[in-house]
Image (cartoon, rainbow, N blue to C red; front, side, top):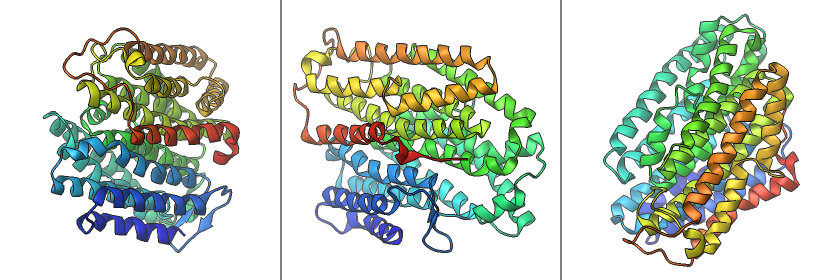
Length: 455
């Protein structure tokens, strides 16, 4: 099944140049790929091997399903943008999204470190193209430069670490490497070198400056896939590598990184309250959530990992939906400024419902899966250090504040933008997009065991 999915996904790369209706054809093929991948990986509890180099397990399967689930949704959200592009630009865009989908499937399915690194870095090419070629403003080139430099700076130490591990063990197989290196004495600097690429991808606070720029300048499809899946590749890498460095929790570097992550959760939540750009606010919100997730992963306990993984999957769907909603406002008002884009509760009541659901999930209100993940992470962090209670409590409060602030600014009040009057109805593609974001979140509330993992 996975091999068939990869074949269809690869076929999708050249389809835009052969089809008379490339957008519809790509969505159809992407949806077929999603169904095949989800059929293969549904309710998986043990490792499933497809070939010598391809396999999936309880850590990779939900992320793989998240990737293929969101690809057709990002194409749906990009429909209006693509109508204003030339035929060549549209076909290039569809090709890049297809390449990105294929590389994401491979990233989460390969079971060798070197292949994982190659796929991990290959995602840079289509993402960089989406940002620099299809961004709306000239600052997109600077955003692309930041994205490339930060990614490469983290990748080189990671590659060096993988090559050393390959030399020590004689193999790059993830399972065999873990068995041979597990318990090996680690130095603080070597631990940092090995995990630096994943910290930047998450991103960890102080290594996050590329993310707001990339989100703000990227088209809606780039923002959706970047927040939903590409950040989670960092978490996936951490979950794959940290168990090898037992006991990593005793390292001084580990404690410093955890303190930095928790501090970042608090600081970026405060930054969100000062934002006037809607996409920048959502981007900093992602940094806050992922910083706490990083801290939880580094504890390496069953509860902390389960909470972190719940948050990764739930945040992937929630942040993608928020970027799609912000694009809906941008297409009608031609601005992302919170002080101008107001009054949409009156103008578009149906959109208000989707905004409310997305923000309720973002602020981790019960019974959302975000709430379950956050509670498990907070309990785990409290067990690690009681001091974290104050930080996590303040971060949770600030998350609720900026989420409510966003709802009030965009949905309430009177509209101030007179340049482009919004329509009072949503397009069917938009309704379908938001419904398909919300459905998995509701399903996970009823069946949280779908993403059950252990360390």
